[in-house]
Amino acid sequence: MTAGIDDISIYIPRLFISASDFAYARGLDIQKLENGLGISKMAMVDTNQDPACLAANACLKIMQKNNLSPKDIGRLYIATESSFDESKAMNSYVIGMLEQVYGNESFEHCGGIECKFACVSGSYALYDNSNWIRAGEAEGKYALVVVSDIAKYDLRSSGEVTQGAGAIAMLLNDQPRLLQFDPKVTSTSIKNEYDFYRPFGKETPIVHGQYSNLLYLIQVKKALSTYKKKVFANGLIKLKHDETILDYIDYLNMHLPYSNMGKKALAYLLRHEWRNLSRWTNIIKKIKMQEPTPQNVKGTIESVLADSDFMKNDHIFTKLFVNTREFQDVYESKLASSLIASKIIGNLYTASLYLGFRSSLEFEFQKGVDLADKRIGFGSYGSGSSAMIFSGVIQPEYKQIVKDMNLEMEIGKRKKLSLEEYEEIHENKRNVDENILDSKKEFILIDVKTKNENHGKRTYKFNE
Ligand code: COA
Image 1 (tube, rainbow, N blue to C red):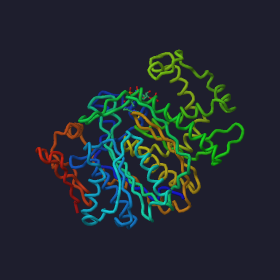
Image 2 (image 1 turned 180 degrees about the horizontal axis):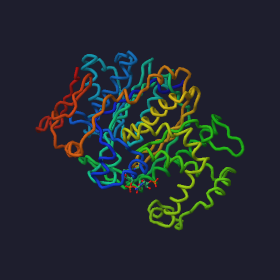
Image 3 (image 1 turned 30 degrees about the vertical axis):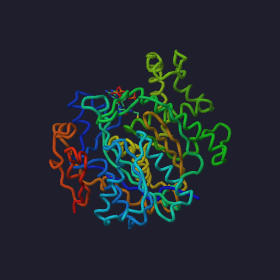
Image 4 (image 1 turned 90 degrees about the horizontal axis):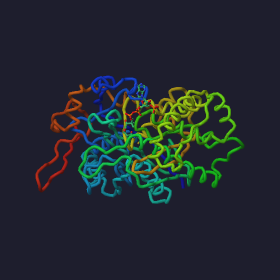
């Protein structure tokens, strides 16, 4: 049996901080944000929004758009790394909110859990729910998989420039109009690591940024190597002489903690995939530099990062490589459109890969490309750490979904925060009801109890 994404919806909070204001306040060169990292705006939550609100708003949108009632939904999963309870799952809050609109106990028949593995958990949730559908357990119902996060780093930390907030809801079924997953190719890698983690009670993560960047690349490459074995074994793709698997992936979506990370990942994967092909010989000739290798053969991430000569030369080599026409052709045709939304929204942790997918659909469609039958590759990464590679094919009915996509219209009129307002919200100096924006037809948080017997209990309301 088949399974895939039938429709996708997005909810992005309308507050944002601009990269230029931010760079000025922190004494950073704006070029580092705009060109180095690829960030121009970062979406921020208001005082009356939390990740459950964002998720519920994305769910409501997709249900209303498709005229679904709760009885059409069999599972509601939430993947997040912005959890605010160690026991009560975020989907229970979301169901509570949706029942304010659809009626008490209207989701009673539904199942689901909150999933955690940093930014990769949404991909595991998609995979597990696809298998629920493939196993014939869905009885004609949809699975609703929501990825929702508030990417929040310490003030003045190096991660502060890679923040953002938002949720994406994906409706899965056995006859998807948008994307059908390729069967039996989903591939993972996993390793106990401390590149990024958020201990109990801490609102912001402990991050080793450069370590995390490199680990992401290595883990994704490992998962890709398993993906290739599976794809060749089941005959999904057959390579001819001097070809690579990436020649058969029409569009690539990568996990995007910031938009330029997608470009970095593409460069890394292409270097490994092209190294033994004839096109690499031409590239090396053009670049006029041999590909550097680390001095220390131990090969640990620490030893690679500590090898300053290698890091410097590898950086130079990568820059030369990404400027070649060969790289630029692949970048423009397979990846560039997926990076546009991230630039104006920022980091969405679990949702950032799917924001990229959503972005690619909208902006490729706008170019007039017929997306039917195109194969989409997904490179998912979660710190801690695990990577997942999987793929799917755009379905003939995709236009029904993609034709109305309009990111700017869907976000609505945005309001720029002053640095003072941003820091007040960031440091939780404003009460829940000291919100900046008025909201309409949205779920909002109205209270979080602080007294012993009901400490942490949250109340939400649907603002008509
Ligand atoms: N003008 C133009 N580009 C500039 C610049 C300037 N003045 N200054 C720096 N840059 C470029 C750098 O060359 C680099 O680009 P490159 O990697 O293509 O060479 C980019 O901007 C980032 O600079 P860098 O010095 O690496 O920034 P940093 O030390 O502040 O760290 C992160 C960047 C992403 C590691 C950091 O923001 C972070 O820790 N983020 C959170 C964790 C994270 O996102 N991990 C990713 C894996 S999930």
